Image 1 (cartoon, rainbow, N blue to C red):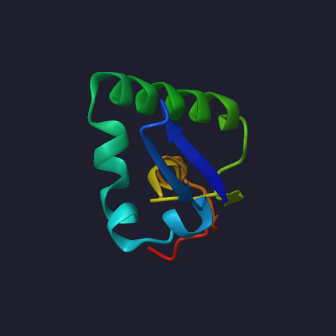
Image 2: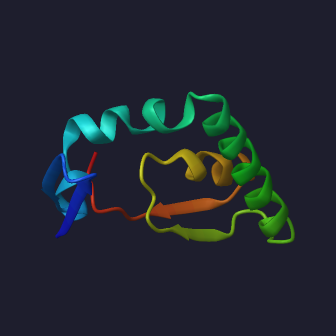
Length: 92
């Protein structure tokens, strides 16, 4: 568990293992993280980097995506013709 403080005004105990299991957090994650300009640029660059890094793999390779989160990167891998097994702390 991590204690978060904001200039001494805000303080709470934050447990990432529980935070990411929360259904509302999981459902809103992509929209919260990737709708800003910087988030969209990061998303695009991350997917392009993933494609370039795995471009030499034969089609239908089995890839383990850990942590898979919302499956955002798994989509890219599936589009490339691979099999994807995703593992994440959050069932959502």
